[in-house]
Image (tube, rainbow, N blue to C red; front, top):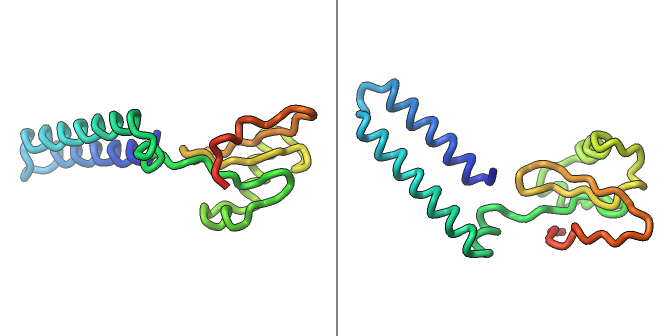
Length: 131
């Protein structure tokens, strides 16, 4: 789910609850608002699939937070992630040492991915990750 999907979901819930609870707004007004949001969601999804620039604008890019033993402090501050958050993600992945970690990535959906060191293996999954 990208940020726009979240906004649409919250807006739909708000419109539906207002339509149901409020005596001032009619069913036709609520259905019109829902139809417009659904249409807007369809247009954004269509543009996201067909335009890489629009896709990056809506979804963003994964961001590198930790790489080969180094915390990327400037990036961590910008995304409001602490060293403790990164260490918790590493522990959650079942890894006991930061020396065993190649990278920690903040994904576009807000989740954190931890990539282990693999001796003699090239790390190709960092191809589209922003520093």
